[in-house]
Image (tube, rainbow, N blue to C red; front, side):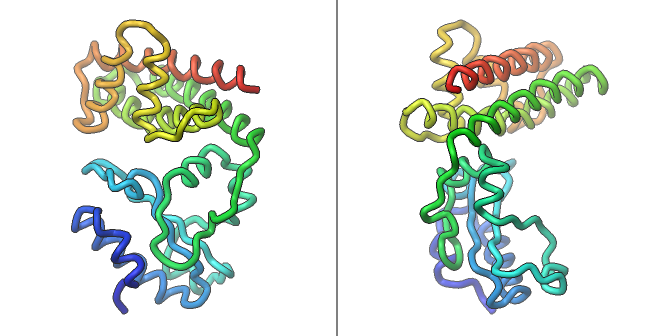
Length: 235
């Protein structure tokens, strides 16, 4: 069938292999869903042209109807925008800031998410992250590989929450990584830039030295608690 010109143009700044995979997926979705496929949206780092080798490619499909026989052709999760935006306010706030339309009409045009929903979800995400890091460390041991993986997994939620928080505080929207660096700078304490460097290292190399890994993990737990206190102040 061939990817739509709209999608091809919007994928020009992605590396060749990811762009080819996305284009192929869009072709498959159009064939499976036909006229029921309303939109395909790329969001996250890919929408900013900032994919790294370890980055996920995040795609959102919007359907006019949810037909089982068609969905069986492509497995995934599909939600109604308005309801999902309120229930998963933090995630959808990030999508609103960082998305690129690949096919169809923009499902986020005119969409706004209530501030109260975003604040509630931010607090939940940060509390869940704090508890998950503690639990995983306690239950699964402190091997460098495991701790490094926990740090890498925590980076995305922390950065995304930081970006949303700055917008709620009236500051210009920025890339999540830069937003977290801005919040760390506002703490005015030594050692935090090293923590950010270790987060990037864990994401890229998937391994930190044992002493560095444990120290970084507990700094991230502390940071998640500080972010949650800052969100509480916004309420």
